Amino acid sequence: MIESCSSGEHRLEPSFLARSAMSNFSDSHETVENPITSANHHRLLLPQQSQVWAVLRERDSLQRLTYSLCSTFLGCMCLSGDINRLNDEQWEIILRAQNIYRLAGPVIKNGTSRRFDTIGPSWRHPTGWQAVLRVSDDRLSALVVAHAFKEAPEKVTLDLPEGAWALTHQFPHETACLDGNRLTVSFAGEFSAQTLLLHLAEN
Image (cartoon, rainbow, N blue to C red):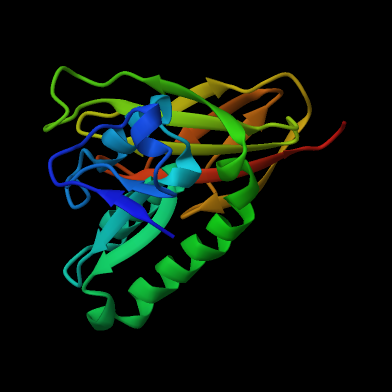
Protein backbone atom coordinates (compact mmCIF):
# COMPACT_ATOMS: atom_id res chain seq x y z
CA MET A 1 0.00 0.00 0.00
CA ILE A 2 1.37 3.41 -1.01
CA GLU A 3 0.66 6.54 1.02
CA SER A 4 0.90 10.04 -0.40
CA CYS A 5 2.15 12.32 2.39
CA SER A 6 3.32 15.92 2.33
CA SER A 7 3.80 18.28 5.25
CA GLY A 8 1.70 21.41 5.01
CA GLU A 9 -0.78 20.04 2.45
CA HIS A 10 -0.27 18.85 -1.09
CA ARG A 11 -2.27 18.40 -4.25
CA LEU A 12 -5.49 16.62 -3.32
CA GLU A 13 -6.84 16.40 -6.84
CA PRO A 14 -7.95 13.35 -8.86
CA SER A 15 -4.84 12.66 -10.93
CA PHE A 16 -2.59 12.93 -7.86
CA LEU A 17 -4.86 10.87 -5.59
CA ALA A 18 -5.15 8.13 -8.21
CA ARG A 19 -1.45 7.35 -7.77
CA SER A 20 -1.73 6.13 -4.18
CA ALA A 21 -4.08 4.13 -1.97
CA MET A 22 -3.94 6.53 1.00
CA SER A 23 -3.36 10.23 1.57
CA ASN A 24 -2.21 11.99 4.72
CA PHE A 25 -3.70 15.43 4.39
CA SER A 26 -2.18 17.69 7.05
CA ASP A 27 -0.09 18.14 10.19
CA SER A 28 -3.10 19.26 12.25
CA HIS A 29 -3.65 15.86 13.86
CA GLU A 30 -2.78 16.97 17.40
CA THR A 31 -4.78 20.20 17.30
CA VAL A 32 -8.43 20.94 18.11
CA GLU A 33 -9.18 21.72 14.46
CA ASN A 34 -8.37 18.17 13.35
CA PRO A 35 -12.07 17.17 13.00
CA ILE A 36 -12.77 20.29 10.94
CA THR A 37 -9.95 19.52 8.51
CA SER A 38 -10.97 15.85 8.38
CA ALA A 39 -14.60 16.72 7.60
CA ASN A 40 -13.56 19.23 4.92
CA HIS A 41 -11.69 16.52 3.06
CA HIS A 42 -14.87 14.55 2.44
CA ARG A 43 -15.29 17.01 -0.45
CA LEU A 44 -11.90 16.10 -1.89
CA LEU A 45 -11.18 12.41 -1.35
CA LEU A 46 -12.83 9.21 -0.23
CA PRO A 47 -12.86 8.70 3.56
CA GLN A 48 -11.42 5.22 3.01
CA GLN A 49 -8.43 6.94 1.36
CA SER A 50 -8.01 9.65 4.00
CA GLN A 51 -5.73 8.89 6.94
CA VAL A 52 -6.99 10.61 10.09
CA TRP A 53 -4.48 10.41 12.92
CA ALA A 54 -5.40 10.54 16.60
CA VAL A 55 -2.29 11.65 18.48
CA LEU A 56 -2.92 10.28 21.97
CA ARG A 57 -0.98 11.64 24.95
CA GLU A 58 -0.69 10.14 28.43
CA ARG A 59 -1.68 13.53 29.87
CA ASP A 60 -4.95 13.55 27.88
CA SER A 61 -8.21 13.42 29.81
CA LEU A 62 -10.73 10.79 28.74
CA GLN A 63 -12.75 13.55 27.10
CA ARG A 64 -9.73 14.69 25.08
CA LEU A 65 -8.97 11.11 24.05
CA THR A 66 -12.56 10.71 22.90
CA TYR A 67 -12.41 14.00 20.97
CA SER A 68 -9.35 12.75 19.09
CA LEU A 69 -10.65 9.22 18.52
CA CYS A 70 -14.00 10.40 17.15
CA SER A 71 -12.12 12.36 14.46
CA THR A 72 -10.75 9.09 13.07
CA PHE A 73 -14.28 7.96 12.14
CA LEU A 74 -14.10 10.63 9.42
CA GLY A 75 -11.54 8.55 7.56
CA CYS A 76 -9.07 5.73 8.10
CA MET A 77 -8.28 5.38 11.82
CA CYS A 78 -4.60 5.87 12.62
CA LEU A 79 -3.13 6.12 16.12
CA SER A 80 0.12 7.63 17.35
CA GLY A 81 1.54 9.51 20.34
CA ASP A 82 2.22 8.03 23.77
CA ILE A 83 0.66 4.67 22.92
CA ASN A 84 3.09 2.72 25.09
CA ARG A 85 2.47 4.92 28.14
CA LEU A 86 -1.32 5.02 28.33
CA ASN A 87 -3.03 3.56 31.39
CA ASP A 88 -5.70 0.85 31.46
CA GLU A 89 -8.60 3.31 31.60
CA GLN A 90 -7.30 5.17 28.56
CA TRP A 91 -6.79 1.90 26.67
CA GLU A 92 -10.35 0.85 27.45
CA ILE A 93 -11.58 3.97 25.62
CA ILE A 94 -9.34 3.20 22.64
CA LEU A 95 -10.48 -0.42 22.39
CA ARG A 96 -14.14 0.61 22.56
CA ALA A 97 -13.57 3.08 19.74
CA GLN A 98 -11.79 0.47 17.64
CA ASN A 99 -14.60 -2.06 18.10
CA ILE A 100 -17.22 0.43 16.92
CA TYR A 101 -14.96 1.58 14.10
CA ARG A 102 -14.83 -1.98 12.75
CA LEU A 103 -18.64 -2.06 12.70
CA ALA A 104 -18.75 1.33 11.00
CA GLY A 105 -16.25 0.25 8.35
CA PRO A 106 -18.77 -0.51 5.57
CA VAL A 107 -20.49 2.89 5.75
CA ILE A 108 -17.13 4.69 5.97
CA LYS A 109 -15.98 2.81 2.89
CA ASN A 110 -19.12 3.18 0.79
CA GLY A 111 -21.47 6.03 1.52
CA THR A 112 -22.43 9.67 1.06
CA SER A 113 -21.56 12.42 3.53
CA ARG A 114 -23.50 15.48 4.62
CA ARG A 115 -22.08 18.08 6.97
CA PHE A 116 -23.90 20.23 9.53
CA ASP A 117 -22.17 23.00 11.49
CA THR A 118 -22.23 26.43 13.08
CA ILE A 119 -18.46 27.00 13.21
CA GLY A 120 -17.19 30.51 13.98
CA PRO A 121 -14.78 32.49 11.78
CA SER A 122 -11.61 30.79 13.09
CA TRP A 123 -10.74 27.16 12.46
CA ARG A 124 -7.62 27.49 14.63
CA HIS A 125 -9.75 28.57 17.61
CA PRO A 126 -13.10 27.04 16.69
CA THR A 127 -16.41 27.88 18.30
CA GLY A 128 -19.77 26.16 17.85
CA TRP A 129 -20.09 22.60 16.61
CA GLN A 130 -20.05 20.32 13.59
CA ALA A 131 -21.54 16.96 12.70
CA VAL A 132 -21.00 14.71 9.70
CA LEU A 133 -23.79 12.33 8.71
CA ARG A 134 -22.64 9.52 6.43
CA VAL A 135 -25.26 7.21 4.95
CA SER A 136 -24.30 3.90 3.33
CA ASP A 137 -24.89 3.38 -0.37
CA ASP A 138 -27.64 0.85 0.35
CA ARG A 139 -29.30 3.42 2.68
CA LEU A 140 -29.52 0.84 5.50
CA SER A 141 -26.79 2.19 7.78
CA ALA A 142 -25.70 5.62 8.97
CA LEU A 143 -22.80 7.07 10.91
CA VAL A 144 -22.86 10.38 12.78
CA VAL A 145 -19.65 12.02 14.03
CA ALA A 146 -20.32 15.15 16.10
CA HIS A 147 -17.80 17.52 17.69
CA ALA A 148 -18.36 20.37 20.13
CA PHE A 149 -15.99 23.31 20.13
CA LYS A 150 -15.79 26.34 22.41
CA GLU A 151 -19.18 27.86 23.32
CA ALA A 152 -20.98 24.85 21.86
CA PRO A 153 -24.63 24.17 22.72
CA GLU A 154 -25.46 21.33 25.09
CA LYS A 155 -27.24 19.43 22.30
CA VAL A 156 -27.93 19.59 18.58
CA THR A 157 -30.62 17.99 16.41
CA LEU A 158 -30.04 16.51 12.95
CA ASP A 159 -32.52 15.31 10.34
CA LEU A 160 -31.88 11.76 9.16
CA PRO A 161 -33.15 10.34 5.87
CA GLU A 162 -36.73 9.08 5.99
CA GLY A 163 -37.17 5.69 7.64
CA ALA A 164 -37.40 3.91 10.98
CA TRP A 165 -33.86 4.32 12.29
CA ALA A 166 -32.48 2.59 15.38
CA LEU A 167 -29.41 3.57 17.40
CA THR A 168 -27.16 0.53 17.68
CA HIS A 169 -23.88 1.95 19.07
CA GLN A 170 -22.88 5.18 20.81
CA PHE A 171 -19.38 6.29 21.74
CA PRO A 172 -18.38 7.26 24.35
CA HIS A 173 -21.74 7.69 26.14
CA GLU A 174 -25.33 6.68 25.42
CA THR A 175 -26.79 10.17 25.45
CA ALA A 176 -28.37 10.51 21.99
CA CYS A 177 -32.07 10.02 21.34
CA LEU A 178 -34.30 9.51 18.31
CA ASP A 179 -37.70 11.03 17.60
CA GLY A 180 -38.78 9.66 14.25
CA ASN A 181 -36.01 10.63 11.87
CA ARG A 182 -34.77 13.47 14.10
CA LEU A 183 -31.60 12.66 16.02
CA THR A 184 -30.61 14.70 19.08
CA VAL A 185 -26.95 14.50 20.11
CA SER A 186 -25.87 15.71 23.56
CA PHE A 187 -22.35 16.96 24.24
CA ALA A 188 -20.32 16.50 27.43
CA GLY A 189 -19.02 20.07 27.23
CA GLU A 190 -16.62 22.14 25.17
CA PHE A 191 -14.23 20.11 23.00
CA SER A 192 -16.13 16.87 23.43
CA ALA A 193 -17.43 14.47 20.80
CA GLN A 194 -19.93 11.72 20.09
CA THR A 195 -19.96 9.00 17.44
CA LEU A 196 -23.17 7.14 16.65
CA LEU A 197 -23.94 4.16 14.47
CA LEU A 198 -27.51 3.62 13.25
CA HIS A 199 -29.35 1.03 11.17
CA LEU A 200 -32.68 1.12 9.43
CA ALA A 201 -35.10 -0.89 11.56
CA GLU A 202 -37.53 -1.46 8.69
CA ASN A 203 -36.72 -1.82 5.04
